[in-house]
Amino acid sequence: MNIKVSIIIPAYNIEKYIEKCIKSAINQTIKDIEIIVVNDGSTDGTLEIINKFSKIDNRIKIINKKNGGVSSARNIGFEISFGEYIQYIDGDDWIEQDACEILYDFAIKNDLDMVVSDFYYDDRNNLLKWNDIESNKFYTNIEYLNLLLQDKSAPSIWNKFIKREIHENILFSEKYSYGEDLSTVAKLAYQSKKIGKLDKAFIHYIFNPNSITNASYLKKGFEKILACHDINEFLKNKDEYPILEGNIQKLMSRKIPSFITNDILMNSKSYNKALYITMNFFKFKLPIKSTNIVDILIYQLLYILPYKYVLIICIKIRKYLLVSKNFIKEFFR
Image 1 (cartoon, rainbow, N blue to C red):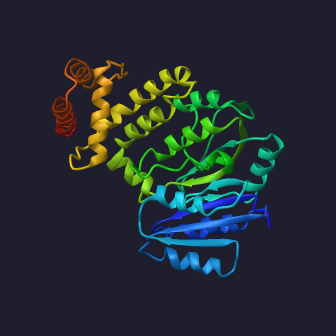
Image 2 (tube, one colour):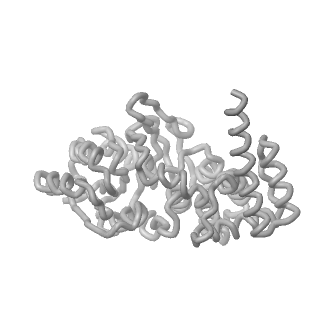
Image 3 (cartoon, rainbow, N blue to C red):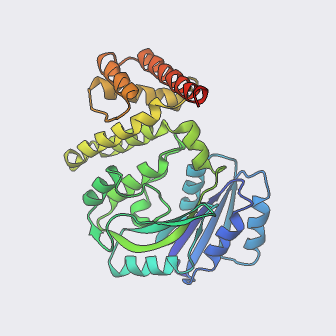
């Protein structure tokens, strides 16, 4: 059978969500698909649920592996896939029944390497549609990359429908666990000749406070710096780099505040690398916009003294001032 779409689902300790996710894949109106579920070392009932579905649908392939994170799960899933196009779904999300058929037909009709679609943000109390970039329009790789780098298009991988040809030599970074979608989508976009926007939402992004993404936001937000650096390293020797460089630097400047506001994890290799990259950013005196007077003063100091321990002290001072401010507010309430 010619496999038109490979649906790749990484799953880790999501027994409350995985059944709905797999059902949404099984019930796709296009039948020439494979469903690859990568159990990333789950310790709850996730694997049992996956096994149950594999017995009733032979299109489901299960991979069991030690826990290594969502990037390693996606990479392994892609490596064994055969579909013309790839659709990623996180195991705690789900997809509309006609998604793959509409996306595939749109991609084939318009000879697209990547399709960008809208998506639903679902926190179980509210359902909001997120409209991604201009409707029903086609882009070159550089046109779309500039939109992505300006935060005008969502960096998520799961609202992208990807031709496997452009994906062959592009894998998710396993060196960091927050921002990997951004860097991967940027690389895939560069590899694309033609990218299309479809004005329709398919993916239901379920807000799960225990998900890898939401947990990483609190602990590893600084890794967005590594993602920006990764994009820069990938593109810096390309002919189009001068067109993109300004937006790459602006993207970095928007991510640095999330680094400044994070707790210090000095024993983390990824944190120390982000620290080094951030110091270099200040050494080149690239501007960072902020309306917070404390942040402005910290940035100005770092422009003058772009050194590791100055940055560490600034982070500590900022955290102390924030705690003090909140204490004063509570005291006088």
